[in-house]
Image (cartoon, rainbow, N blue to C red; front, side, top):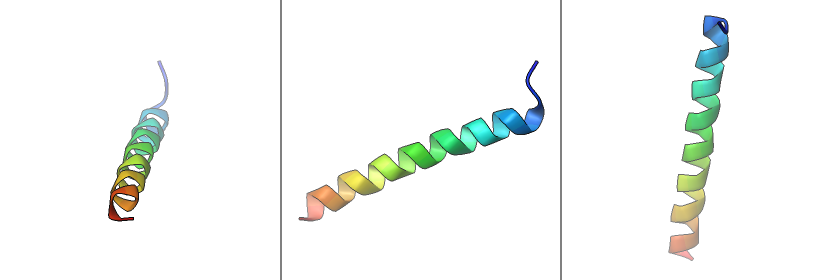
Length: 31
């Protein structure tokens, strides 16, 4: 079983990757 803070960090990494892709998509749309 992984420690709790590992899963939390994993969730944040996934969220930031999603946000990064979303911002990149919006940025490309505006150009």
